[in-house]
Amino acid sequence: MGPAPMRSPDSDPSPFADAASRFEWSVASDVREIDPIVSTITRACVDAGFPDQACRLNVPVALTEAMANAIMRGNEGDVSRSMRVCARIDDAMLCVEVTDEGAGFDAEAARAMCQDPEWLEREDGRGVFLMYALMDKVEMWCDAGHTVRLVLRRK
Image (cartoon, rainbow, N blue to C red; front, side, top):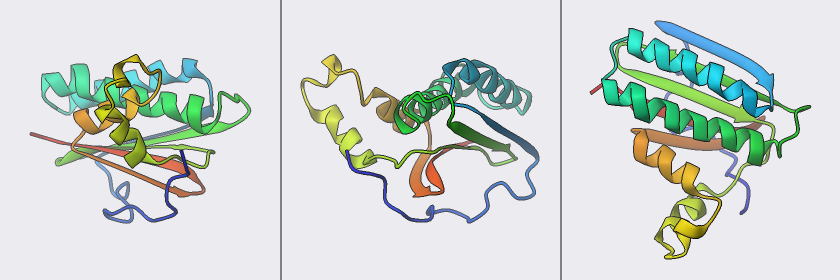
C-alpha cells in the first residue's frame, strides 16, 4: 500500500492543549510496551467515568491495534525506532495519537479489503477495521512520521 497522505488532521490543530488528563510516552518499538500503556489509558478512562463497554472493549482493542501497527508495520519491528503515544481525556472525549517513524499506508485501501470475501483468511487489515469500528473518529496523516488519531466521545 502507498504511504498515507501528507496533510494536517481535520480537527483542531492542538487537541492536547489544556487537557484535563494528559499522558505521553516515547518508547522503543517493542510489543512489550503496548500493555502498560493500554492499561494506563484504560484505567484513566474508567476513573473518568467512561461507559463500561468503552473501557473493556473499545479503548483497549483499538489502542492495541494502533500501537501494534505502529511497531510492526510503521517501524517494521525495529526496536531502534521509537513510537510516541499521547492521550488526553477531558469532559467530552478521549483522544489518543500514536506516531511511528514509518511512511504510513493507504487507510482507505485497508478498509476496502474488508469487502473482499477472502478478507477473513488474511493476516492484515483487521486492525484498521477494528479501529474504525470501535472509535468515533479515526484520522491518519504523515508529518514527522505516521500518526493515527483515535477519538472516543463520551456517550
